Length: 253
Image (cartoon, rainbow, N blue to C red; front, side):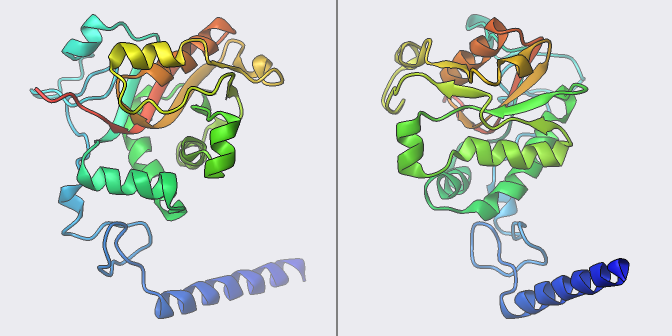
């Protein structure tokens, strides 16, 4: 009887989903065009999203010229600016379409962006995944969290943990000081602004011991916040840290 009840409930859910789809057909993530499944991009929008393919910097994920031969290569910026993490990836470059997706997730409650974004990030990060890796988001200070109501990096890391089949700790790290926005600051200003502002949650320090960590953020600009989060993990016993962002801001030549 329990199995029969479960089947009936599942059948009812499937029927409800079919009815909802009939009334509200799925639309492209970034426009009103009808698509065949939830979370898809239409044929016109897909090529406008600057996904990162092929050769990329092993440290920050920015695309690089040349064929991908499987060797670890780094961009000029990462050769000069040593990264505290071992590897870094991003799913896309930050431009108009990517900005639309990021701002929708960050400010306009577009939670429907999370699952497809996580799938794109999973594809970018898959070669970095280690056994028993723990995912954690870059944290928001509680003042900003109260204003925004949610941490978009935590939404992404939760969805990404499901996509990769890995453990997730949304409050592994916390901000110890409110730093304000990074907008308008140069590279040195960004690093100085977030220095020593991220630490493990006191009740989560044990989860770092000897663990490979994958830090998740929505955007990597110069990498200052990810560097501060990485240093906090390594200082409290993490075996290694890798990072992944939905979008990477590439410096213009």
